Image 1 (cartoon, rainbow, N blue to C red):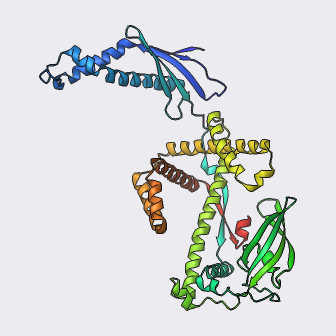
Image 2 (cartoon, rainbow, N blue to C red):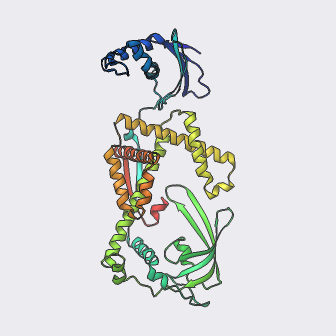
Length: 439
């Protein structure tokens, strides 16, 4: 414990604990300074001060002081304590995360006002040179195969399509491309335990399962069992996943006579099949651009966490770790992982998240990036237009101050990320179809 003098005020370090980012200080100042400020404020109000039994501006000084002393004293002491702490941090070259917590421990009107403050300190963030960062952005090519799959998915969602599947064609019927089947599916990933899905519905060609698995089901009869192996390899990483599907057909329905016509397209808001194709292409392109940008953002955050090393407050890491553990435990594969394994991953992810959060905040401060009221209103208006069917639910969501603050925080983060992406070097690579999701 040591005393640091700031002007005429002594600041004493009480106990920092194990976290080097936590600071607990104690200080005091003469109550005479508070009294002097109270009397100055009372004098400033005297000419307009009103009180029953006295003319305006003619209330005795002592009575005025007695009436407003409590209110003035609280405000003056708080202002004095915050100024002392701010001056102390400034002289030490430190900054706090948020507002310190204050507690006045003693008020001696013949002596000193004593208070304590608990402060969470901002870490020292190294200079960030965004121009040194090089990333690859993967863009999906929306080719005709993707459009055809989207048309099949659209068709399968229509009322007309589902009405065609009311009759089971019989036990001897062999499935074809475009048919719907109900099956019991057992899926095994690597050496893991099999996962069972009873009464699993799929349409061959929609690629709910991998395309090679669905194609292997062509010719299947009711009651038949088919075992198919599938290998998935990510091009950008040396990761190979092996799947084994054991599929037993329970029932099948002929879908070969169902066609997408101009008449059906018009019924669902397009002028023709060609117009529907254009609409689907625009929708898919937008969705894939959003996915591409999200993946690029993740790569950027990972790179920031990797190349910039600095310590962060344990208190914030522990708080973030609780959220990460909750998220990890919600994943099915977590059932087979030990608590120690989950804790270790959660700690790593939490440290990275906290570190990246500080970098984003620092870049925003250095470049004066803020979210305006107009930007929040524009975002809210866009959400209303994009999903008018859930307008009431959205209005209820934004009526909460907490939710609105969270919304502003998300807009702020995306705005800073946009700034960062505009400063780094990005190489664009185009991938076709399923390759886009495998890189």
